[in-house]
Image (cartoon, rainbow, N blue to C red):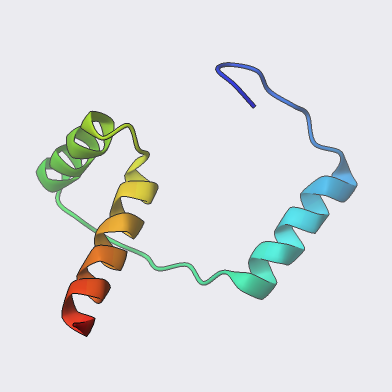
Length: 68
């Protein structure tokens, strides 16, 4: 999907996504001060990433660095 193109999901697709998430994902609540969030968001934008993607990449890099 590119740009502002949006696909409407059928109820079956929504249910499939929900079932997948329930089975395979674990939510991690993360509270940060608004100022820190703005720093994270700015860094993510500079790198062409979403905030979620930026945080996940940072976690992966730290795990990798500490595994050596």
